[in-house]
Amino acid sequence: MSEQEIEQRMDQAAGLRRMSNPKPVKVIAVASGKGGVGKSSVSVNLAVALSTAGNRVLLMDADLGLANVDVLLGLSPRYNLAHVMDGEAELEEILVEGPGGIQIIPASSGTKRMAELGPAENTGLIRSFSELSGDWDYLIIDTAAGIADSVISFARAAREVMVVVCDEPSSITDAYALIKVLHRDYGVERVHVVANMVSGAAEGKTLYDKLARVCERYLDLTVAYMGAIPRDDAMRKAVQRQQAVVNAYPGSPSGRAYAEMAKRVDKLPLPTRAEGHLEFFVERLVQYNASGGEVMP
Image (cartoon, rainbow, N blue to C red; front, side):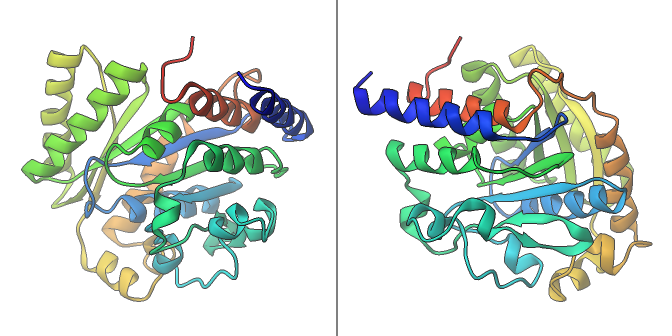
């Protein structure tokens, strides 16, 4: 390791020590094998539902080059992660408030450079995380679709991974491929499946069973079921109004489904105090970045 790398690691460690979050944080990465399955909608509505239930929630748009959380919620943030990378703003300065009091870390859209960050730039992003000092119960990370390095990095660093899948062959195949990479190559064990845009609970459970059987047979991995989100007219209207369905139409089938999902997420075990703070999440990102993607002991 070069002197510059050592200095960077020392700076990161100093930043970690400055973090003051007094309680464990549940870090959940929301991922999908392919785009177009409603992953960002799941991230947004789950975050708002958790906040409505009384939790303090930080939602990060981690699709660094094709961000859309702000679009889904009709927000126009002045700054985003591209400004942090350019040294024009601190990470804490770009936070914007969303519905239900959630805090959002916005990313940039249509910025090819942000989708192709090199190791040094990733280090800068990680270091900026170490400066956050909020008192949150949840950090929800809306990752990019697929198995890009950034997706693997955030999924490995998170305590829980939620994989969104819909009932079409390519979605199921790609979801399995994502889970296989995370589990086989990086040892990720805590995987939860969300069946999205289904006709009802029965179709959602059938879809989960298909994916669960394949994972158990070929990966020797038991994936958990986080529930199903039905396809309904309320969701379509909410998207058109650029609102979370849990706010716009809380009594709709999809709105109630998200409220139930938030209850299930709230029942996930808290991480230990030793590993549950944001600095643990950041340290795992540091390790991944320093190893160039290799598994760290």
